[in-house]
Length: 387
Image 1 (tube, rainbow, N blue to C red):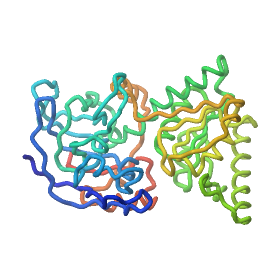
Image 2 (image 1 turned 180 degrees about the vertical axis):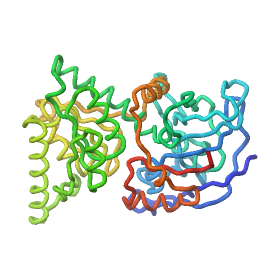
Image 3 (image 1 turned 30 degrees about the vertical axis):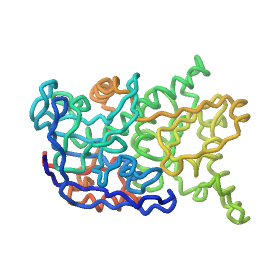
């Protein structure tokens, strides 16, 4: 057995409904796992990326991953940079090699993820540990002599996810809008790291691009990247619960005022046409506004459900307006090296402030800050071992 220092999540109470589950807390503890097999590698994490799936696991929504895996404790963290300490004889990885972790614990016949490493895949140990093991084929070496830093590479996950989603969404839009100049069409997105990366791809493809942000710092960052920054504080009451719509007249009036201001903004940016492609990774609370802002032959595309999984729309209207709905998850395993090389060749990679990286001892604080919305970076990282 191998024993390591880790941040662990304990299972919550059983037989409790989703809404009544108490959130989980990470605890610092010794964690043990069996030695790697011949198709596995022993690694030490260097940098980890704090992803939405960690927040989902801690909130125990939509599932308690410990119960799903039938394990009392789980070590989370499935995206980041590791150093190889040793690999089985069937692997070409060498000791000391630096790799990105690809989270495909189980793939379907076409290379798409079915179970995610260090989330819903049983008996997987994540990067919130000083040492861990994983299947060697989940390790993608960094480019030799890369011009980018390890923290920049550690933020790859949102970019890989964006690359895959954009390929599908763009092709769907093009299927209906053949021979259209993208320069006359708007790609819009609610805030977030995946959306930022995706809008940079849309900009490369020639589209107008715009994105919301809620702080002066983020608005300035977007402007510096050539993305039209939209201050979401201009429509503060836009959230709408489709399962419990407001009945109070004052609340309804506030929502309508915010919605009107938002749609006016999108109209101004799109010459009255609406968004050709709308990247919405928020989900239920903003979905009504998303659909209203969508152009005819428009595409609403998503890779996540940060604030709500269940959405509602009128199918007849969606058919008449020829709206296409794209839903993707992670990316395709066979594309891993292609996306990595695209980043290295084009510089499509995030800037990361080293001062904003949390140390391993601060992971508990990182969890609290992320949950409270106190992290200003689109790419929150934590450092596990020295580089």
